[in-house]
Amino acid sequence: MTEARQIYQDTIDCMTAAIVARDPDAFLQVAHLPFDVRTVDGVIVRKTKDEVAQFMLGFADQLAAQDVTRYERTCDAARLVNPGQITGYHTSRVWTAAGDAMQPFLSRATLCRSGDTWQVALNETALRMADWALLPAWFGSQARPSTLCPATDGDQRLFLFQLILDRISTAFLSGDSDAWLDCLCLPLQMVTRQGVNAFETPDAIRADFALYQREFEIHGITDIIREAKTAEIIDGDQMVGTYTTHILRGATHVVPPWDASMTLRCENGLWRVTTVMRAIGHLNWRALTPSDIEDIPSDTPQKGAQI
Image (cartoon, rainbow, N blue to C red):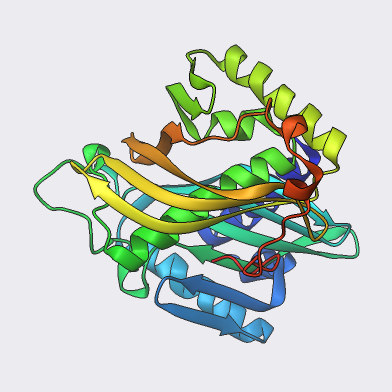
């Protein structure tokens, strides 16, 4: 586990424990002011300690009202953006005595450093405001929670797909092969110009990941931006999305941007990648001409501008 990922996990563990214990003082130790919570359809900003405390107690009340017996958040990937900021992704799970209270869901958080303490300043999730009282609008009453996949609407699907893409980019930028593995449903198929590569084991994934990391080091990669274009649910347990990838060294494209598609499967309530179509592969980069490398399109997204 990378240092950033461990810091992220330790920080959200402290925050989760404070919620479960209904301890506003402990929560405020790891909450940065202003404290910003965003969903697909809304933003909640708490600017004072009293406002943050009331927000936390309200959330704890929701857990109690749903008879929640267990609440966990697990870091999936995290990256040190600069000495004072970490961005990462985590999966939240909520249980009652009867089982899952809702489907696991993915969130993104930004941590800021305050002296020797890391604090959460921003938390974004693919849920909607209406999803809290803990039961999402897409939670079907005629199927077991453990077998459901969220049949989200268009905006929510695209938001979720973007979160997944960003989580993958963070795993590669932080050099965390375990975070990449957490995104996958094996066997993984990568369709490149050279053909189809199938990866059936974690060791095969780690070996391929190491080749990408070597290429990143050679070319001085500083950022990866994947822009979600479309996301569709197929047969309830699969999602197919299209996106554009930008691999950058500063403001310069190391390789020309390209469009690709990704297929994900809902496995135990979590979306995981099964196939990537038009993956660039790590063997193509040196074959590109200097003019290709310097080909910077006018619509290059600014860093941090993605959803």
